[in-house]
Image (cartoon, rainbow, N blue to C red):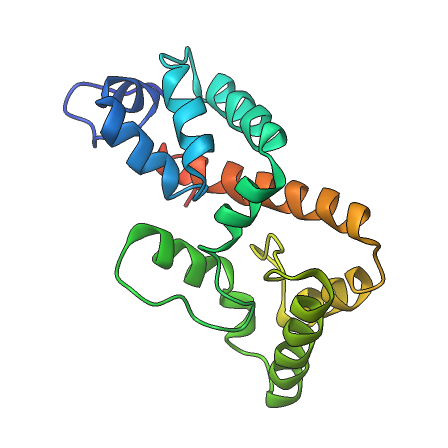
Length: 177
């Protein structure tokens, strides 16, 4: 994790630790839209380094009750649907799902159909850490996960939420492009 230098851009662990409680919670909500997550992670400041923050965030995601996970999922658009708005979270989502941009209509149609089937089966949006995945890879994962039982899928969703949160925390700290 890089150190923040005098005059450097306002990011990094030192800048995060220096935020007011409200500002820290707002930044964390862009990483995981669960107020319980943001409260837990912000309250444990200061962090000695980004690794400690990432560990605390992962632990906080793991401790979320299922209703709190669902709250976080409500901020995620369906795979293949562009997040609206000009905020950081929407921009990150569009970037994370960029693998869909070049997909053919057949794959897009199958993703839309898969999203509908997934939501009917599990009652929430299909969440996958889409960074670096093609649309076909996202679709393949969706189709496999449709065969999961409820408990298995909840574990998978929590893991995907943790991966997305970790990537967004790294961006928040200015460590990932």
